Length: 403
Image (cartoon, rainbow, N blue to C red; front, side, top):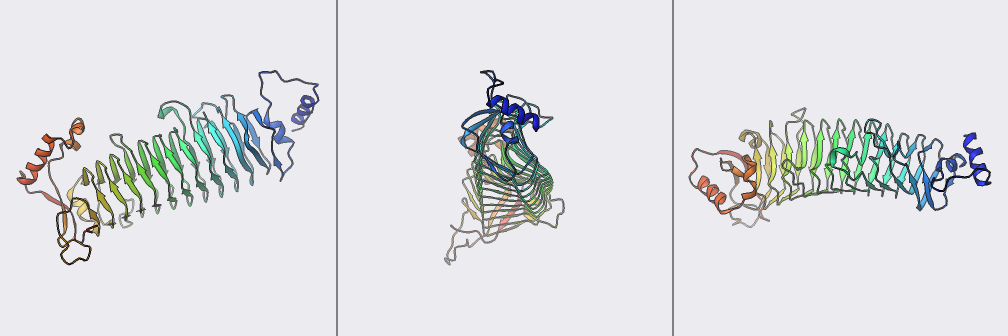
């Protein structure tokens, strides 16, 4: 610290000059800022890396740039109660092994808000850090293909954090591992590989996010009791792209979401504890190749009050018995053929879905281009008119909604 202060005094008095091409190090300003006060550097560009090890507020006012010069992590917060606000942080190192990031947060009770991260490998690395607020930031990784980028937000062994109103694009994923009781609210996540991925991360709350144009939307693996509510997931169009992928996770609730124009709406397999079911309720599935796809399931899930509109296939299964064992009640089916003679808003006859052998476009990916073409429509019609074998019942919704 004393060496930094001495160098700072020498530079400011003109006894030591900085080359014209070099950037002044922001670390000098940090070292001179007393604990509990606010540092507002003069507008301009400063050199990183910066290590903050006392409780201060670093406020760039939208006019301060910290440039990492392509080496290491640009800003590291290593003490509690720090505020990082109004900075542009750019040009981190390129090491995946060392998790070079725009910001490393290894502390509690910090606020990171209204910052811009550009050309950083990882955006914000939250490591063993709790009760922090990450709000209103713009995060972009390197201009490379997905596998060469880092996570926009990477959270590891961190709990009770709030991630809200961030704009995250052109990163690899948002990755949460061994992290529980976090809130991920009202973020915009686009043009990346996986919107959010939860691994061994129970009890998280995900609401109001806009997830679009990624390969996959939200992946849940070995993470129990997640609540995923009121999000919009759209345009996940890779061959295996899905809005939601639920794998071996118990008690997951998927409610009130709009799921639009994806290859798969929801892909689900058996929970780790089969008695803890999935709740898939009041979602809108529209313009997807397949709305819901179950594989390796035991059934028993609650699938009620959803809207299925203009999907190529509403429900697909690896085995007919898997979906038949679920509780299907009160869903709206755009292709329902029936009447509501008593005017109670429910169909007078059940809505049945059978397992036909006509899904050429699904079983043969090369045929996807010809979906809805006259030839495949004829094959579909003939199979339903005169199937070669008795089709199995996939599901029966005894009270389908009419509107």
